Length: 319
Image 1 (cartoon, rainbow, N blue to C red):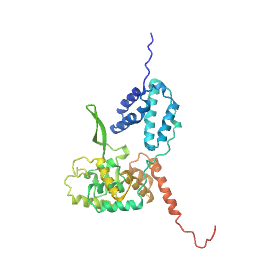
Image 2: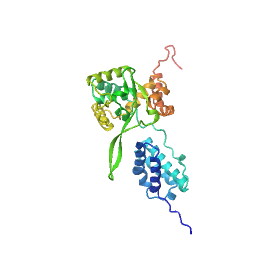
Image 3: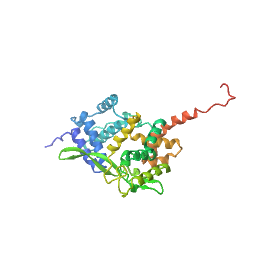
Image 4: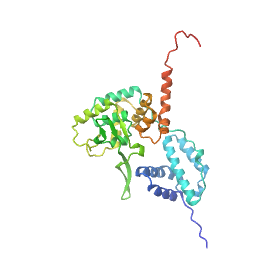
């Protein structure tokens, strides 16, 4: 007597896929994938049998997401990656239909970040250089070192070499969801940097090092294992840094994100002819192509504008 194999629902298969992924990825990545499934995919796919998921359905799903115009390209790409991976897993294990994702074009991602304008940069620098406080310190470090929010939160005094002006990125701080007694809460976690290449050494300009040295002396730092933002063993909370950064932004009427500082750093480096390979390493990108895609195009417009400022020779009257 033959038993019919019970057909799987998307919810079951996505849970299987997530459990497998948990064995091979960082916890922060796991929570990101879990959030994508719970927040985005389950709304449309949760109660569907795998046999009910076909190309037209997937195409319509993404067209509707794009038309809502509330998601960044980066978020859409993450949703596409997770859904594609779940369906590929299902195809391999349960022989469900193959879905072609090549038709789903999402365009290039620039995360919507633009560098600071000259006026914004001058205002922010003036504000921070005149003050010796935690938020000013981390803002200047990100503006002249390109550190991510979690990376600058994770910096300790022992990571700064005052002789060479080099800063080592050894950890990142993230606030992640954890489930305790069936209740979901968030908790600060000290993690390895985002990727292998994110664990890096970054040189900073001498004038920033001078500011840090004076800050260090003013606060009479006794323990180099203290976090630089809290100047204690208390873990720096990225959410707290973001909050105080936004307070500064409100003073000057800026509508920017902390990540804008990293984007400004990268753009300024390219405009000052720092080679892309060195910049890619300082930013901790996994490949030069990421740096090229994210930043080089934004500086080409600047270069075109600069070139067009050149005056034609006076003897040329008409062309």
